[in-house]
Image (cartoon, rainbow, N blue to C red; front, side):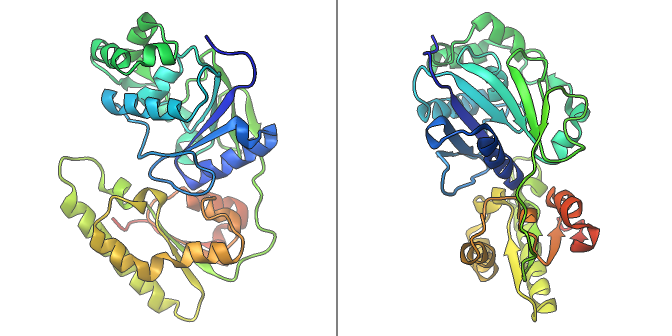
Length: 325
């Protein structure tokens, strides 16, 4: 049973743009610190985050149950939950969509996926059978904790997945900062993200995620190490080419862990420039970097950041190296 009173608003954040969208939604709705719980995915850490996770468990039953337990541990027992998600593709989000604890589900603009909702409108079922999922949910105490109907969970586990399940009765709207986001979906609220009034003196070099670029497979060590070598070589090249400029370097948040130790040892030469600049100039280092209006942006690899730089500051502010990995 959900206790009467205020709900807990849970934000699942896995990128700079979803962090910035979360801050805008919190301000828009007038939520207080006691109302919210912020979950940083892909290893995102920083002030204000209540929980840091690698991901939401993906299609793994064990990992999804572990994530749900971690999420519930930071929420007050018995209170209703209002969720803010970048998408509902994977298993944990599908379970939460059937939870009696969950009162509402909202989506946050997160870049490329939310710009093409039809592309992931229907995906294959995540599971071949529902029995192992139900067994795991019972073992972890999640049937009661999330107020789940086992029959409903058994059905949804075998249905096609959806990136944005806006037909779910719990769907209560989405929040966007771009005109091309959530096309065809109802109840989309546009928000204007706060952008820097004047340009920073520095130029920013951002690298797309090494781990994402490596793809999936049983042993990616050689692939990841080769990509790390390319990142360091590109950083060295950029540093030499723009020696007279204030040049900042930034890894994708997902790569804050999971790469070889030797890479992080070598990266220290470059990697402290961006957070240090943000600290000195009062900038939010977790926010979408395009909001900070740097003198120029160099985006290495396929990254959503390019979209926001062009939209807010014009294509002349951006240089891209499309293929690195």
